Image 1: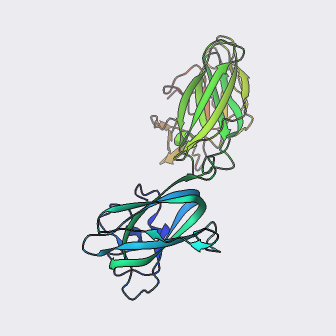
Image 2: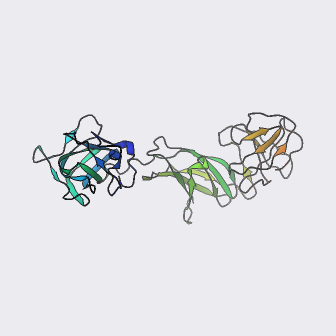
Length: 338
């Protein structure tokens, strides 16, 4: 609770003395605390842990000038439907010793531990007001809980002798959200160590991998979040091109694109109406590459409104890692490099 991973809305209570005594203030060492209404004869405070956890200990703390909880019991459940009191010795409700002053802390062990998502603490005796700050200790009931699953459907976007560009689908089970990915690639039957790179979430599930010409690689991807690291994907095996060769047949959306040999500078022309935004402003178009670099505007003869055009001109550099050129549509005889 102290690290605020538990939201304020996940902490509720039977009553509150006033607006400065909200249940959400009941975090250990907070500058405010929860204080039950003085007319509440059976006060309780409840915490939704967000997932099923093993609860092993509870720390309680009063609040200076308000009071403290000197004894309490707690109830719990996994679905907020049927509450169970924590019992010992065949069914006796366990009453725990609380605090002895309004600012010190008291730690009690929960042994045997309980598996729960919802914990409700019930003060049985208070000194002054029932003022409480608290913390729960434990661990996940399932070590993989909250972690993302395996990334899916790894595939190549493009291949050259020095670079393999890949993309993938996010896991079906994203756990507690995805913060990014790690990509690992290694030569098949090679002796070299595997290479890894961290890919931020804003990369649109794609990565560019530096490789050796005409070599087979095994590629894996794993997702990570605040809870930890998920499992590696199934291996994707792909071979880099021979030196000087470039092979691209599909765009990131798996749309088959046409190719044309223009001259020694142009290897392939790929058009994709889904991938890269071209914005029409009074007849001027600007090309935005995947690296978020706005390239210079270019006057074109035709108005193309609300259409995305992505043209890869391999052999011509528009920005580091990208090779784009904006063309007039229909395709003219002469292209202009940005």
